Image (cartoon, rainbow, N blue to C red):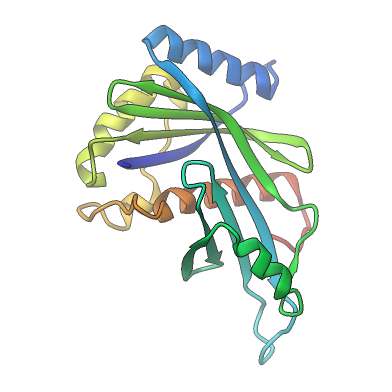
Length: 211
């Protein structure tokens, strides 16, 4: 796995989420991208049942990625993060006296994978409680490992099918512009998905205690 950028794509004016996704598929195919199956990323939210010393409760996010089917990622709000076996969900059930699942707040992103030269592209529909909330685009530059060396090329490629909707430099890139991307455990990629999911939650659920 190489350097990966995950971004939100606005829904086209007068179009639905699915219609916009179909438009993106068509643009990629016109570029010469070849469809290579599907993908899924999901996120369950948990909150601690006890409150220690009156401090605000941290949330725990458990995420799965179809690209790494044998593992999952557990991220505490503000860090740290843990790479665990896929059956970590079973452990969370056993820890229900300490962590409660925030029912109705599971976020899921499903869509199609495309390959174009050295790029792997995933266009997905983000849903929550069976309701479409937005569109994600993940672009991976497979040969690269240093974000600072890859971003301009990735941005140019994104412009080829997203036009003016190209994202700003991802925060995980800015934090280590000359450092190595962390692809082996997908932490940097999943952190970007979590930022996107939380952004869509805030846009859609006002006044909620779950961020």
